[in-house]
Length: 191
Image 1 (cartoon, rainbow, N blue to C red):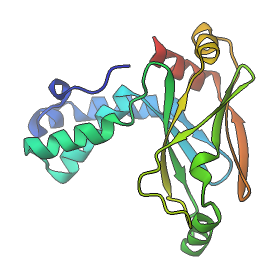
Image 2: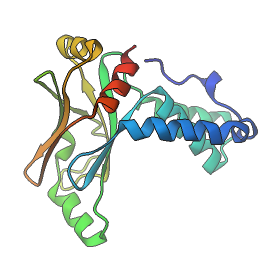
Image 3: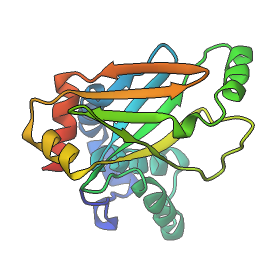
C-alpha cells in the first residue's frame, strides 16, 4: 500500500470544496473497518485513505498552511499506513467514567503488547508503537501493526478465511471474529 504523498494533500480552500463527499466516503469505509473488541475497546483498521483523511482534517482543524507543519502531519499519519504485508490499526481504550478509566489505564499497563490477529488459525502477534509508553500505565489510544506471515497473507488474499482480532491481558481479554465486510475491506488493501 502506498503512503500518502505530498501531491495528494489539498490546500484548505480546495479541501473545503470536496470535504463533504470525501468525508461521507471515509465514514462508510471506516464503518466496515471499525471493530468492537469487547465492551471497552474499539479497533479501527487503518489504510492510505484513512490516513489521508486524518491529515486533511488535522490541517483543516488546526488551520495549518506552513509547509514544514504540513510535512510533519504527513510524516506522522503516514506511520498509520500499513506496508504490503501487514495490518495497521488504532486501538481506543474506552471507559466513559473518568475514575474507572484512570484505574483501568493503570491495570492495563503492558496491553500494547497483548493484541493479536488470527488468520486461518495462525496467531500473529502485534508490533506496538512503544514511543511514549510508561510501564506503570497504558495510553488510551494505541497505534499497532500486525506483520503477516506469508501463509497468513496468502490466506487473506485468497478469501473465504476466518480472521479474528484479540487481546490477552490479565485485566482484559476479548476475541472477535471479523465480519466478511471487514475482512473484504482488509483484503482490498492488499490488492
